[in-house]
Length: 184
Image 1 (cartoon, helix red, strand yellow):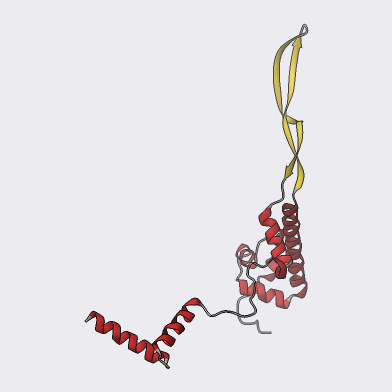
Image 2 (image 1 turned 180 degrees about the vertical axis):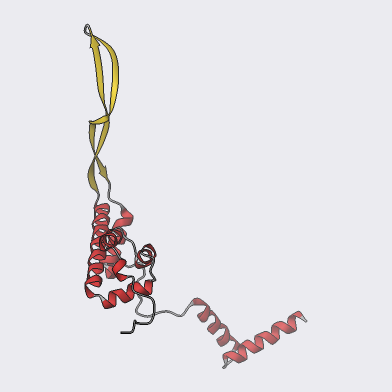
């Protein structure tokens, strides 16, 4: 039996658990290919040949996109979070009712305080969200029904009409010869 031409496939050397972590972390195909030391074209070929592999990649990318979408939405509407401050445990030694020494146990952290903080809604995130979700309403550029001629075209047409010239090329040639005559 003859061996196929070309380099042996590296598909079976790809660790799917590692691949999943990379994709869920937002890595694109180029970065994944570099990590596994394969060509992007090879990764694309693997997607074509191995349907389950392709479906898994799509699902993981979709999951990563959903995380970003949720975070963008939270940022657009604002949210609360708890900030927790922890300090090492204090060990206070007393002798005859008087404090003699104080030590810190850095192996055990105790919660010192919890503060609920508010992240206010972010206007940039709101704009981004609305432009993508409702582009017809929030688009920056509105399409005009009738596009007017640019001002320069109108200006040139007025000059041509005043000069009484029928052909634009004649007007351009005559204006060039006039300007040459002025400077000579």
